[in-house]
Image 1 (tube, rainbow, N blue to C red):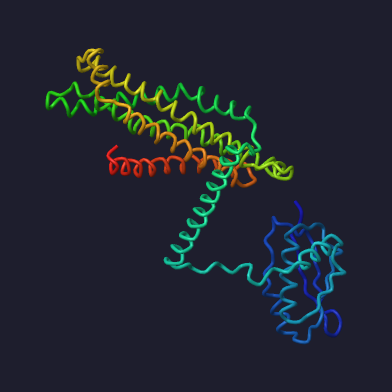
Image 2: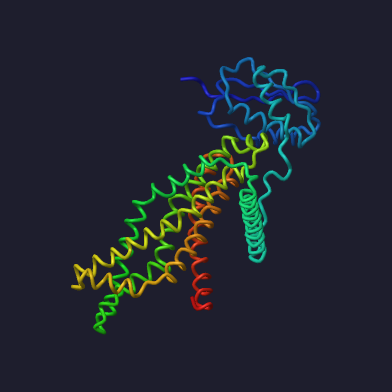
Length: 377
């Protein structure tokens, strides 16, 4: 087993100190205390130079460097010159690197405690900045739509057709399943109350109007926010990471026209159709419960639905669906365009797109419901 380090202090000349280093200076051995060196300097106030002798040293690693940095700091504190010529060449180079870039005076300063009001102010400013950016993005999207109507948008119809397939036909399965289950839920909840009044037949009215006016559009919007909004954010975020969006801008191609516009148009066009599809399966879910649980005939259920649901209810649902399509598309594309340039940023953008899309849908549902009630629609 290798011997541990040895340290010897000796007078070198009239005003010098020589530190003799012997043995094995490695991290497996505890480093010496700096107290003996400080005591030496206190007892020899005329010391002006510290030198080293490492000829008998058998090995070294970062342990020796740590000790030498400490010695250098003590020497600087006492205004003593350090002669490193007696040290190995590698040690001298590492010490030179360590002292080449001194530590900033405030590098270890901890951040002061921020007051509660300051935190609220910072959060408010952050929210205001995000809202401003989102409104600016929405304005750019509206301008892009205007350019499309004038025939001046940098736009490929093939991209729109592909996005229509991805957001429409490929979403039919999940929309049908969720809407059918929502219809079942509405039927059971309504029947649990209506049965007390002997009005179980009106389950058809409740399910039909509920799906046509609100639930069909809202559930479809939430599904598209989780499915399509996240996909838009991930696609555009990946393009941002790969600098493809920067390449488009360099070529003079508007990212709003080329990337955002087809996705926004696809959702605006497909959301009403998907909502009609969802309404149908929600009504079928209510029909399933009514026939199998409450002994309501198929013809009776469909007749009550036809009488309860009119074109006004359907148009309200389709209007809401178009609004939800814009919100989901804008939320997904905004998070993708504003994405950072790392893989974790892409994941965060997809998550934010889903959360913001669903939040916007719920807020829009509340506003539209109030507006339609005030207008008597």
